[in-house]
Amino acid sequence: MTFSAEVKPTTRRTDVLEWVSEIARLTKPSSIHWVTGSESEQRHLIDVMVAAGTIAQLNPEKRPNSFIARSHESDVARVESRTFICSTHQKDAGPNNNWAEPDEMRSTLGGVFTESMRGRTMYVIPFLMGPIGSPVTRAGIEITDSPYVVMSMGVMTRAGIVAMEVIDSGVDWVKAVHSVGAPLEQGEADVPWPCNTTKYITHFPETREIWSFGSAYGGNALLGKKAFALRIASAMARDEGWLAEHMMLIRATSPDGRVKHIAAAFPSACGKTNFAMLQPTLPGWTIETLGDDIVWMWVDEDGKLRAINPETGFFGVAPGTSEKSNPVAMETMWGNTIFTNVAVTDDNDVWWEGMTRETPDHLIDWRGDDWTPASEQPASHPNARFTVAISQCPSTAAGWDDPHGVVIDALIFGGRRRTTMPLVVEARSWQHGVYLGATMASERTAAGEGIVGELTRDPFAMAPFTGYHVGDHWAHWLAIGERLAQSGHAPRIFQVNWFRRGDDGRFLWPGFGENIRVVDWIVKRLSGETGGVDSPIGVLPHRADVNMHGLTVSDADLTELLTVDHAVIEEDAISAQSVLEFAGVRTPQSMWDENAETLRLSS
Ligand code: GTP
Ligand code: SPV
Ligand code: MN
Picture (cartoon, rainbow, N blue to C red):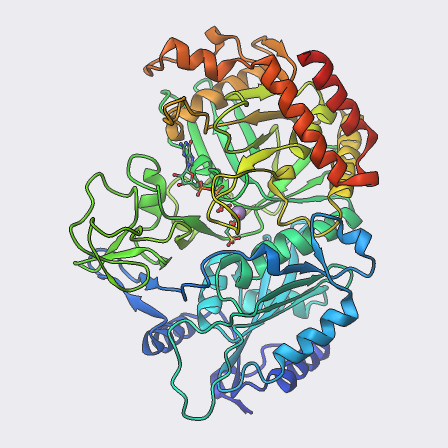
C-alpha cells in the first residue's frame, strides 16, 4: 500500500484512521487518497478520469470546465430492488423497505467487498451535510474507489479539509463505504464506467452505516444524498425529534413585499428542481432557490419549524430542461458542470430531449453511438442528469447556507397525476395534511425502477428513502405537528398537481413559471386574504382568486383543474386504503379517521 505525499491522512482521529485501515485491509486498493477539496486535487481527478475515458471535456468555448460522463448502460438510475435497510428487527424497517438481517448482510458485504478495490485508488472523502453551526448539520466519511464519485461529492457536499476539521473537533460521523465492484488485475485495462451487475445499496440505521456496492450512478453512489441525507438521517431525525425529507425549498416574495418560505415534497423527477428555480410570470413576484431535493427541518426554541438544505449542489434531471421551461437551470450550467448520460452535439456541447425546439441532425447519444432523428431510441437517457454547484444558480437566495435556516410558512405535497387531483388544495388541518402526504400517489418516472407511468402510492415522496417503518414516519410527522401546535406556529399544508391531462393527453396546466399563480394563491391563503371552496380533499380555490392575468387557459380546462369529482375522489380514497393497510398496525388511527372523513365528504 502506498500513501502518496500529497494525499496523506488529513486527520489524527484514531477511530477514523483505524476504520480507513480496516476498509483498506478488506478491499485491498493500490493506494489511498485522503480528499482535501483543493483545486490541484480537482485537476488531478479530471486528468485521471479523462485518461480512463470516464469523462470527456466538452467544448470549453461553449461550456468551460464541463464534462460528459457516459455510464454503463445497466447503471442508469437508483436500484430500489437492491436497496436494503438492515435494522435488527425486520418490523423496524417496515414493509416499505427490503430488509436484511444485519449480521447476514455484513457477511455478504464482507464477501463482495473482499479485494473489491484491487488495482484502484481508494479515496477517503470527509463531508458535511448542512452548514457548519446548524443544530442538524451532520458529518460523514465516504470511502470510494470511484473518482467520479469524489468529483460529484465535491459539488454536492461540503467535502475535504473543511469537513475533516469538524470531524477532528470530535463530532459523530457516519461511515459510508462505496465500491464500484470492479477490481483490476495487474496489467488489466480499465473500462470507462466500471460497475458490477451485482448491486447492494445497504443501510444500517442503528449503527449509522452505509455500504454500497456495484453502482456508480447518482443516489446509489453519492452516499451523502439519498443514503445519508434521507435514509440514515430520517432514522436519526426520528430518534432526535427532527425531519429529513425529500423536498425542495424556496423563498417567495410577493409584489407587496411579503416573504414566505415554502418546502415541497414531490417524488423523483416530478418537478422539485423546476419549482425551486421558478421564474414567475406574474409581475412583482420573486422566487429564490434554497434547495432542490432534500430538506432537514427542526422545531426551534420559539416552536417554529426551521429548515436547511443539507446539500451544496444540484443533481438535476436534464431531459425537459430548456430556456423555456427552466432558464435558471440553463444559466446555472453555463460551466463547471458534470453531465451524465446526455447526448453530445457535433460542436462538442450537450443536448437532450426537450432542450431545443429543433432536434440536431446528428448527435453522439448517451451510449456513445451516432444518432440521428431517425433513431428509435432517445439521444439522452430519460434519467440523464447535470451536477452543478448551487452557488452557480442565479436564483440562489442570499444566505442560502445560513446555519439558522429559514422558518417554514407552508409545506406542499404533490405528485404526477394525469387525473383525479386538482391543481391545488389546502389541507383542513395538520393531521389532514399528514394524511395527504401519507396517501400521495404519483406516476412512476425513469429516476427509479419499474414501469414508467404506472400509478403508485409514494408516501411523502419518501417511499424509496424512509430509513424506517413508513407508519412510524407518519406518526413522527403527527408528533412534530403537536409540538408546532403548542406554539401556534405550525406551517399550513397544501397539495399540488402540475401534471393533470386532458383526454387528448395534453397537459391542462402550462406549469413551470406559471406555477407562480398557485404560489400566489397559497400566499393569499397564508395571509387570510382569501376564502375557498370546501371539498372532500380540502379547500379548493375560488376561481376568481386564481390570478390568471396574462394567461389563457380555456374555461373547460380551468374547471377541470380547480374542481374535484366526488365519485372519483371516493374511488381514490378507497384505493388509498391500500397504503394505510400496507403500513399495518403502525398506521396511526388518525390516518384511518381522515380516510373515513374523505369518504364521508365524497359520498
Ligand atoms: P429528482 O431530482 O429526481 O428528485 O426530481 P425533481 O423532483 O427535482 O424533478 P425535476 O424538477 O427535475 O422535473 C422532472 C421532469 O418534470 C422534467 O422533465 C421537467 O421538465 C418536468 N416538469 C417539472 N415541472 C413541471 C411542470 O410544472 N409541468 C410539467 N408539465 N412538467 C414539469
Ligand atoms: C431521485 O431519484 O429522487 C434523485 C436522483 O434525486 S438520485 O440522487 O439518483 O436519487
Ligand atoms: Mn430526488
